[in-house]
Length: 181
Length: 418
Image 1 (cartoon, rainbow over the protein chains, first blue to last red):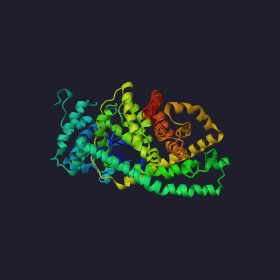
Image 2: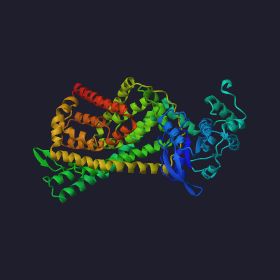
Image 3: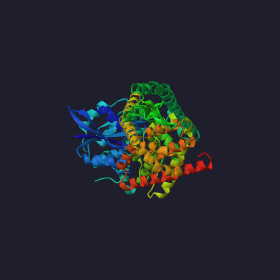
């Protein structure tokens, strides 16, 4: 098993990577710090598991080199669990990538990172409900201070592939594209 | 069954309606600062202040405090005389000239050097350049850069300069690789991967490798010709923008908009800053020091075997007529293939001997910046670009050096300073 860290640029994937592996990957407050992938090892369930810090991507339809690398990493590691890191203050944008990864059949854990920023902006997220609809573990985290990491790691084993139809059903159905509005 | 883009967004809307609640937004101090730094009216003065602050720190901390205050004294008043005495000023011995003091001709006589730039031995200049000058410059620059990175100022600077950079086919984001390159061109070139089209990457890589001097080079230029720094940066900036504009017109391909995220301001974390400084500085030392020593050795050998004199006679007339610089600049130009900081340091030796006018010094320094990216950057360009783009980069490089170098000479002639 491998674990892939995926998410938009500048949501804190490198900070996650450093926290989980104890490695020294640069963390910078601008998008695009990681343009190549980085591998490391983390202890999980008594064994060493490979963790890959994937370059930031907005979607799985690549627009730049970093995104091409991201899609390639995903395709080359079919047996991985994906930790999808979302910016909690911009959940909708992050969910797009998360759904794409779920649709491709990967087991996913969603980390709602920058929970503190979302709170500052007065955005409240019903984590339990989101978990029920998506059918995957959802954990609020603050990467730079380390909050939520223990829970995140403990939930990795709960991650399992979910059918997108199931999510649509849980969300109460979805209109077809033609009648969107 | 995979969803279509619209279906996916519809689903997300459904989900977020049930789970996300947006409260009233408070306007915080952070927001106020964030706005002040991106609106042109206040943002431009802030940007100037920030850049000026960085520059002052760079000059005072690295230049005045460490290099002039400690290192120059240590190397010129203790290290060099110590070695010269220990080996009896043996200018006839080839090993002495190679490792300690190459000496120089004064009134037809070979005399000993009195500082570590002139001496040009592996053990003297070879250590003075990286440890006496460049290390402090790089350290100061990386510290400033790490702070700017972690606070989140760079993307705002990108928004500010976006309009200008669009004129040369680049996006405001280009400020990030450019800034990185001011530390070292290698991470700068790597950072161009975040640009969208091959055209943008090609433009960026070519401009970076030609017109953006690295921290090592800036450090030693500041040490040698502090009074010319303004002119040098201005010349390089004009080259960067001017040739960017031309390349954008002639290179096929598109330069589309990139929508960039401006992250919130954050308090930088001490631990992260320290680890970045450590990793970057140690990487610099590992790469630079062997190359500087090797450069000293090669140049020294070329002098001893007469190869340098031969090259100077062959290339001298061209250098003099086209760029207006004396044939002695051949040796720094050779050393510059390995390390730019070493090459600029060699110019310092030539200046001490008084064989160049101020304008020739200025031209040589600019030429050294633009004529070739350092070996490390060159190798990276090979890796990052396909062969067609690589040949394109090299061709543009040659063209730019010839045109721009000639142009500088021409301006010099018209101003009657060349």
